[in-house]
Image 1 (tube, rainbow, N blue to C red):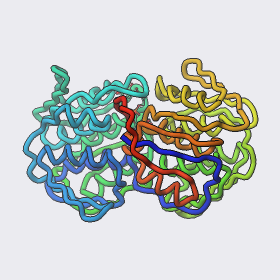
Image 2: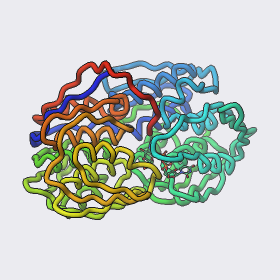
Image 3: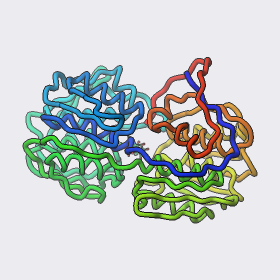
Image 4: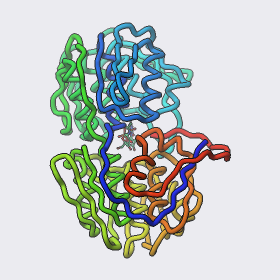
Length: 428
Ligand code: UD1
């Protein structure tokens, strides 16, 4: 195993480019199963989740060709099995997209139940409700969901809660269903729009993605083509918050500033300067920031995936902040690590009360999940002294070259071999 050694206290300065969106690409790659032919996907981030999902597609019989570091070709002409086994599926939560994609292509999917959870219960009842509305029958025996349909027929689905995964999964299943599917109370995240754009560019007929009503007119087949993945607004938000936390000045390039509005607004509210350009955003912070109230919400609200980072930022603000987690039940486990660095944070159910302190002190901390791992790195950059961050497998799942990008911004961060045995778990 490896760990990061961070010597804190250096402001981040310079410019970096943002990679393709993890949460889009982990859905677009399974979506390629719907295409009876080849597609080329560009701006694919170099992250472990991409390796896992492409390995799963290979096991199913798809041919994957790496064209260059950020471009892959997927040929799903000859899929040999509709069974995605437990070993691979348990490595990433987003493998639940195999259900919608295989069902949509073959009217049959046998997919191991996605593994345990880090953020609280992660049910898939809304995904299943959507599949049933299209005519699928579902058995859940022996740790597998088996989905079958004689024919998928468009249906009308009103989700009980706003779910990113269920919205995308039902879109995948409905793309080739007979007739029209309407999804109401759909999630609106940029990755939902990106998956719809990908499918439309391959011949699908999806309208309304990015609003809370999505209409899908089933088509007979999807042809191949080339598609470029949207920039990762969570990665961009991560660097925005890290820049603010270290009192730096960074131009974050290759972004869609509109996707970042909730973060921009919060940073301005607490005293940072944020300049928006066509496809880049600059964050400048020169003073101790003010406290704030933050509540995570589905897009366009403040993203739950950046909650650990804003909490870390506010841990050294000038007063008392309140952060409410309204999406996941257990997303404050990392707070114990921040407390070891001196943060004064109390958590009561889904609310964290943060009394801002002068500065964090470096110490050994571990990543609890992907975004909490990024928050630990951020805490290390902000802290006085040296911080060691372990359990890097989470960070590697979703951030392309985190320490390389940070080093280019002047951070003192390096990765070394860690002899301590790791604990294992799953993540988002
Ligand atoms: C996706 C993101 C994750 C992000 C989350 C919320 C990916 C790969 N992951 O996860 O990073 O934190 O959106 O923005 O894109 N729920 C149900 N029943 C369901 C589905 C969800 O009750 O069938 C609940 C969940 O428990 C959670 C909430 O709905 O409380 C939101 O979950 P959802 O939007 O589905 O998250 P994911 O798609 O798993």
